[in-house]
Amino acid sequence: RPAAPVVVATWDNRIAAAAAWDVLRSGGWALDAAEAAARVPEADPDDHSVGLGGHPDRDGRVTLDACVMDERHRCGAVAAVEDVLHPVSLARMVMERTPHVMLVGEGAREFALSQGVEPVDLLTPEAEAAWREWMETAEYAPAVNSERRDRPSGHADDHDTIGVLALDADGRLCGTCTTSGLAYKMRGRVGDSPILGAGLFVDGGTGGAVATGHGEEVIRVAGASAAVEALRHGRSAQDAAWSVVERIARVTPSDPEAIQIGVLVLGPDGEVGAAGLQPGFNYVVTRPDADPAPDAVGEVT
Ligand code: SD4
Image (tube, rainbow, N blue to C red; front, side, top):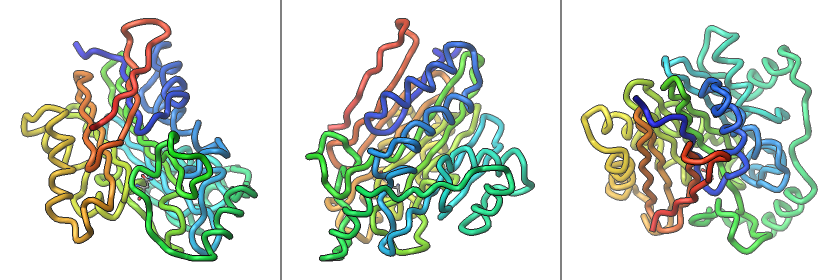
């Protein structure tokens, strides 16, 4: 019997994990839990890598990427969508209300409006000011571990892209991933987060994985899918997570010390694995040991 429920999330997203936990402890579906978690940083204007308040692209437009996947390989994604506060919920609408898996750009925005989603201006004055300051130098160099909130505040790259994996009391494993992508990316750039198999992949019977960090590197090795395949071949969750960062270190054309990748893996038995290419990737795990459940913040060193 799985040690459920369990929720894991990238970075120190404790408030988000608590939102998932509320769903799981009342016997809810892991997909509802993982969606509830992702909606927390999406609506937080102080979180500069997700949704409202996210850093814009280099043209000053906030463009969002998200995806969802349930325990039966049902999935949905949106990429480069603008004016939508909750891209994770829009991704779920793509899954539940269209014959497709992914909608991008203006088509995704039009679909949102057709579903009654109110358009929202996502560029906050603070994010706009940081972007204007960045324009002075316009040097594009995403910082390692830029997602950590304990970096000196006001750093232009502060963010907390969230990937969530939830295992519910009935053993159903689902995941979500949502981001505004790397700060000051080129217009139209899409990272790993909305790509099923890269930023998120779930095979209900085998396990799930999420990735964060420099998305180009995760796409290069089909990161989340690679982790789940490692589980399928009998490796532990921890080994599966390491196998992905090791592969990236081997194949990346970039300097591996100048990039960060964090990978989280959740097995169908509740086993958790985590790996980072550099020290400093942290994540939150919430388990049923106590009620209210304690949040353990793990860190890869
Ligand atoms: C991306 N993987 O767009 C995302 C960024 C990220 O915390 O994880 N930031 O490449």
